[in-house]
Amino acid sequence: MVTRAVAGREWLLALAPRDPRDPRATLDHAAVTAASRGDAVARVGPAAVCWAVGIGEEMAERIVAEIPALGSGTAPFEKLRSGTEASVLRALLVLAQPDAGLSPIPPESLDGVQEFVRRGVSLDGVLRGIRLGHAHMTRSFLRDCEDLVAPDRVAAEMASVTDELFVYIDGFAGAMTREYLTEYDRWTTSAAATRAQTVRAILAGEEVDPVAAGRVLDYDLARRHLGLTMWTGSAAADVGLQRAAADLLRARGARSALVVPVGAGQLWAWGSLPPGPFPTTGPVPPGLRVAFGSAGAGVDGFRRTHAEAQRVERLRRVASSGADVDGATDYDDVAVAALLAGDVGAARDFVRRELGELAGAGEQAADLRTTLLHYLVAERSLITVAGELHIARGTVAYRVKRAEQLLGRSAGERRLELHTALVLARELGDAVL
Image (cartoon, rainbow, N blue to C red; front, side, top):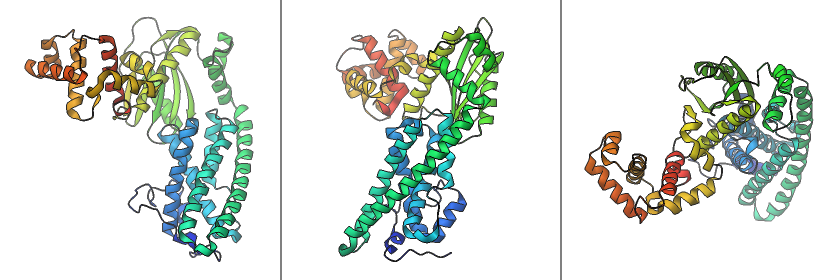
């Protein structure tokens, strides 16, 4: 197979990333299979394929910004990116070689349908994502068409490309709809779906018979529960995650566990705890991020511990200062920040208003905030803070004084608000500073 394009479409072979140094627009960064990538390179050349790789990632980012459910989290985003990248490549090949008999929908795009169904993403949501992606892809083709095609032909070529991409995306949407409905029928008749639907009904506050639901789930809803959410930075196998979740819950004293996969590299889980205190530590396998709720009894406790775990997960995902790293976080350790992080914009405004210049970037400002937070917690004891931070008492006094200068007020004024803002700054970092 040789690099070629139908007469008049040679400009497609000249497509290339606008920034050749962009690491996201390279063959090594491609999300499609090696076979798909190799076939595309043979048909239109490596530069055009790199262009498609970059546009595919932009599409995925645009879609997730509007519809987070389609790709929130690293593994789900990579699954979505594989589909968007594949669709750009297929559109490129269809435009360049319309007589090649290529299907309008590549296999990588179909792969994401199963996950969408299992995560409860509606067909309307999937189709809206397709429309958003199509709009971005069309703009990208037309932008480069205008740059690469001779002025006397560009208007006619842009009109032709627009029409052909509309036909392409119409076929794409139709194939995705058929695949979604087929997978939905398959999933809703499976035992796993019944368990997942039962859990979602409980979490949604629907009236359920705890005994009957417990039989479906093989889990006693009347006992005390510890909920967790788990996610990973890579598309790890669900079975590996399920084993890890069960092991973590057992390490915290759980006698039985309920694990519900909710997408690639993501799951929810609950452990049934005996009365009394339980361990709050346990080894977390490398590559895994875990958010724990606090223990709660009965159906209400089942819901509450899960809601708390989700707040912690959101806190860690939102944080832009390296907080979303491997390991476990307990709700009791970050409860205030987790509650306030539900509206990041409001939290950002609050932190900046309360801290003023103390919300600045850099290591020096971070040291001042850390020292001031310890100072407030220690009831303004310089000796206690010096021991906790392993610095001289005079250094503590200097930092507190400097922090108050940046605040424009004493640390004793609006103490609750100041304490809260410092906690948010510590947990969310650059997202609120």
